[in-house]
Image (cartoon, rainbow, N blue to C red; front, side, top):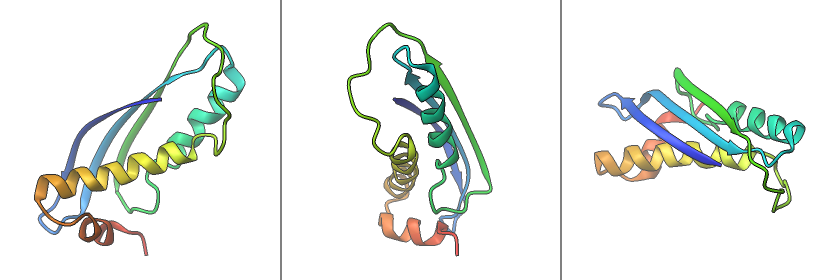
Length: 108
């Protein structure tokens, strides 16, 4: 799965407001599993963070390649990884610790 991360907008108090993400997934000629995989990736994309505006799109890229790995977690780890990547990207840009950004955006 390839993820394209677009601009992230946040306030001065390190609260993330807008996130735009595009998922590109090779479905390896297994449509039923690939659609479930993408659906779970898109529904878990915000993880435990309260972001009011999220735009997440998923595109299936059809190939003739056979699947090469087991589907453990089936999309959930990918969505969680992207949420943590957002936090790290904001922290790097603002030169603050990632824990501070994470705590200010966590749902209570």
